[in-house]
Image 1: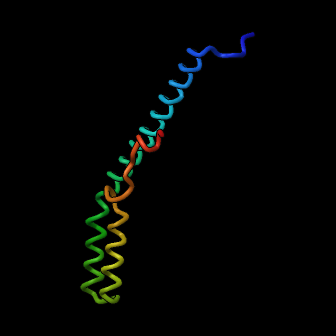
Image 2 (image 1 turned 90 degrees about the vertical axis):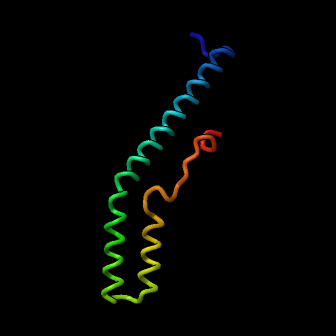
Image 3 (image 1 turned 180 degrees about the vertical axis):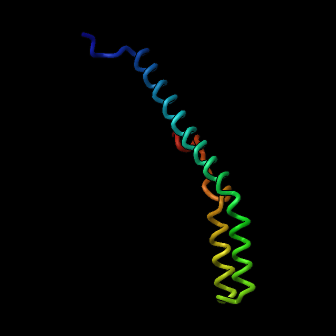
Length: 89
């Protein structure tokens, strides 16, 4: 039974490993994009609620502004830049 790999077999195995890693990362990226796109309709609803709280004077206006900005900061398409080149190095 052969236990050692030739240089060409080792190179081929390493290439297959890189391809599998790349496919896993692109799949994860695709799922993240789908998740972000599905959350996009929540942004106008969130802003409408912030306007209602603002006009009702339920809280101090500074808290409403900071809360609205924090909520929009975590909204889709704003954060998390995904770079495959950095991940694969």
